[in-house]
Length: 158
Image 1: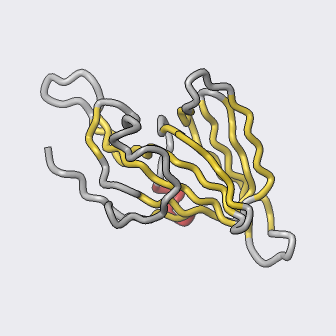
Image 2 (image 1 turned 90 degrees about the horizontal axis):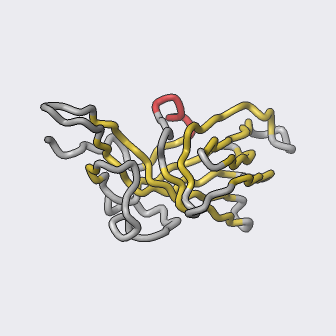
């Protein structure tokens, strides 16, 4: 199998239609109130590889990423996870009108997870690929192979 060719290291809200979050793993979340940001540490599935040549199961090109929501507010977390890790079923973006100063569009974003929901309002997001994707039979990486929990934005290693 060929090595994965990373299309880009930084994805933005404008790429939303080309992205998918189904079965991505959400490892951790945090907020940076000084920068009005909400951050998520994810294992993002860049490509599903269909079974071929007698294989039975899919394989996945997975990379650890940092997702940064800009001008974030109204964060709501309603989850119940026995293991502390959340599996994303869907990621939804809906218009929330203009910011209070009427200068920018803002959206309601919602992670619909198997274990509950996380929603917030923000003006957009950036997704930083921190490492080159790894081909794996699992939809998530082991903690050590992903480099632990991180909210770094440096994609130089990717």
